[in-house]
Length: 247
Image (cartoon, rainbow, N blue to C red; front, side, top):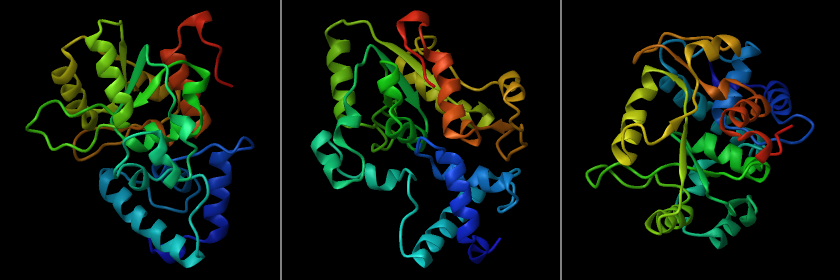
C-alpha cells in the first residue's frame, strides 16, 4: 500500500479510537493493527517485521505531509538517546514524574514501545510496579536496550541490598518471542522470572488472530487497544486486594 493512501481522516479516526475519551497513548504497532482492522493497511501475515518497517516509513511520510506529529503516539527514538535520569525527560513531551517508580515488582518488556505506552498512560500509578526493558544478558551482547537506565540503577541497588524483588515478563505469544525469553532466563536464571504473557488459549479468548510467521506462529498484545491491553496486563500482575484496579 502506498503511503499516499494513508488519508488524514482514516489515520485520525484510528488514533481517536485507540486514545478513547481518556486520551490514552498508543504505539505504532497499535496504530498499525487498528488500520488493519479498518481495512486501511494490509495484514502483516507471515512477515510482521517487514510490515512494520513499511508502515513506519509510510507514517513518517504521512506526518511530514501533514506538517506535524500524530498526537499520543509514543516515540522510543526520542526517549532512548542519552536518557540517564528524570531531568533528561524535559527534552521530550512526557512529564518527568511519569518515571517515579516503586520497584518491589519489576515488569520486563521486550519492546520499548509497549513499555513506554504503559508509562505514558500511568499504568504504574494504578499498580506499584516498575515498567522496564531489561539489560542485555551478557557483555558480548550489544548494549543500549536497558531502559530506563536510572531505574535499573535503583533495581541493582536494592538487589545488592537483599531486598525481595519480583520480576515479571510481559510478552507476546509465539516462537518469535522465545529468543527473548531465553535471554531473560540467561540474565536472571531459569524459573526466576514469572511469565505473564500471551498464550494460544489467551489469544483465542481475546479474539486475537494467531498468524503464521517466518519464525513461527505469533499473536501480539499491541493488537489490543491500549485500554484492553492494560486491563489484561493488570489482571496478570495484580495481587488481589493489594492493588486498586485499572479501569
